[in-house]
Amino acid sequence: METAVLSLDQAVRDLSRVALDELDPSELGSLAVKVGRHIDKIKMLHSRIVVEADRAQSWRESGARDMADWLSGKTGTSRGEAQSRQRLGEALDKSQELADAVENDELSAAAAEQLHDAIMNPPAGTDAEDLADLIDAAKGGGPRDVKAAADRWRETHSSETPEQRTARRYAKRSVSSRPPSDGTVETTVVLPELEHRQFMNAISHVAGDWDTNDTRTPAQRLADGLIQLCKAYAAGTVTGGREKPTILIGCSAETMAGLSDEPGWTSHGDRIPADVVRHLAEDAILRRVVMAGDAVISLGLKVRFATDDQYLALMMRDGGCRWPGCHIPPAWCQVDHLIPVPAGGPSDLDNEVLWCSHHHHVKHRAGVTVLGDAHHLHLLMPDGTLVACPPKGHMNKGTSTGRDDGRTAQAAA
Ligand SMILES: [Zn+2]
Image 1 (cartoon, rainbow, N blue to C red):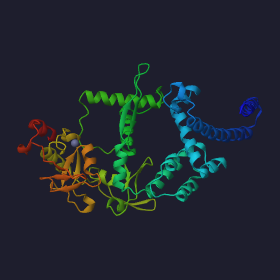
Image 2 (tube, rainbow, N blue to C red):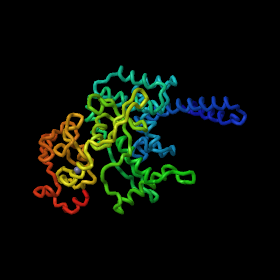
Image 3 (spheres, rainbow, N blue to C red):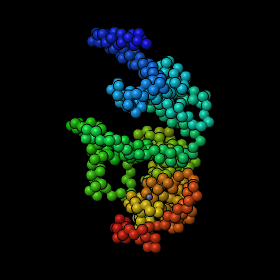
Image 4 (cartoon, helix red, strand yellow):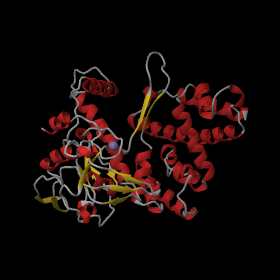
């Protein structure tokens, strides 16, 4: 082992003695690619060593909490990088096809790592052949393409319904903070792709346009946007209300009508699952675009399923989120069509209710049955619980939640 490490040291020393200023442009380019490929091979080797060392519990006596913690401490790299090495090692260890693809320069280490979840935790019912197909399809792709291919593969082979998948992803949302260090706190925000886009749009917009005199880093600028937004909220200037169009989402007419589960797309290239597009359409500004290939043949008028008048009426009638005990005010709620419009539900007040974002997701969960109409609404939950969801606005005094009528009326004015 020592000899092998010594010869590696020697190789690095030899390379560092190459007089870069004496190389012509094509030699420099070729060297950059060759060394890059070797680094990738060494990463692969390293990842396998890391996995073996973990198996042998080499870190156990050190007081570190796990392998990644120990490795990052010993090598001065980030915990994220150590984890990524470990993930690659696990995937290579489990799949010979993957190891061969990296060995033959068909996949970079970074691209191969994106297949970790598919290899370590494949959907039920898939076999080695399915996995080999995925690895084959991934060859030649960069990390982003491979990640997208792995996501598509998982979707195709999963027994989850699209609604279950959306609910599972949505359940991963979180905001968590590490203990303070040097007077700052690292906070991690995990959001579904679409909400992440809304988050970035909001803080980027609040941060103001970037200009060439701006000395801030892009990350600092976004942090300023977030700080501003929180200050605006504390000052009472963030007041909810109907969403203004901030994100453009396209989808096919079939997807909209529920005839197809082909995903929608944003102008940033995000893929938005069909059921999420339909969910959003309930409260979005909609516009029909007829296309032939890339040519736009006709543009429809901007419409909403629920008109602005209906929205005001709903604020008055529902007085906030219809979920019992939820106190989210009407201006922060979303319009839900109990029977979706594409499924033939009418756009009128008998079919429309307000939910907060969270309870809107709960209502759309697989297995939730709507009983009654908007005036006498119960939800039958998958576990058999019956949830009564009466209106809470001042027009419904008998079921008032004690929210003051003046405020509701004012909010609607
Ligand atoms: Zn609610």
